[in-house]
Length: 261
Ligand code: NAD
Image: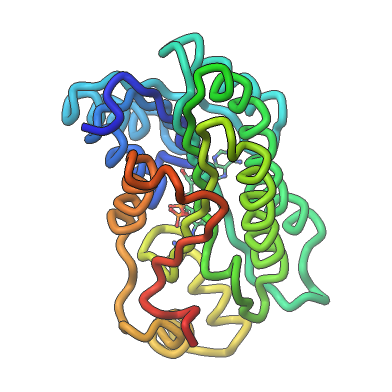
């Protein structure tokens, strides 16, 4: 239990990778603030499940990652409820697939806000407390798309490259304060986000569902397997450990070899 009596805030943790991260950090003893959208009863089930399964406390923040004031409130809520924010995981993210000339302006703005700008707001709110305590772990869920591009994902690829740059910058600023800042970059993980982009990719490329799965999604993943959310979460747990205290400013790929090509 490397995180006993610490507190972790995980954005976008009502589903997919974020939920797996929240549960993995809870398994290490951290109290958890989960965040994200969904049906109230589903969120309550996940929140109560984390408390029951791991014997920690878990609270829910409905903060909308497009709203700077909500994000500041989420960090303040975590500090008031549990006394600190020791681990911040910037994980909330959305996707939209379209040729650049048709890319809706509001989709560009939304993706940049949720996938990149929300991390800036959360980090700046959490850092003063981390500095005061001399310990912190800031981890962002980036993507293989923080390192390489794919067509039709202009906003997502731009936001994820930005997240990798933000990570390096803040890591340098916080290097002497006992705070590490890293990102973890998954390849394709089987979650609702991936499932949700299949119809648009079918349309954009004129392909069947099977063709999108095999020829697009797993085409670049040499292991020919989807990454699991639990594998991404396990990498983040390692980054929270003492053994990882000299790992800062990096971008760790968990992508089945995708970006080695
Ligand atoms: P998901 O759709 O299952 O989960 C996204 C989470 O973000 C949900 O909890 C959702 O409610 C939340 N969210 C969305 N908009 C929000 C907003 N405005 N405010 C607060 N929360 C909001 O997706 P996922 O696949 O688990 O993705 C999680 C992260 O992993 C994202 O940053 C994504 O870019 C990244 N990622 C995913 C994959 C993949 O293959 N699934 C690969 C690489 C990176």
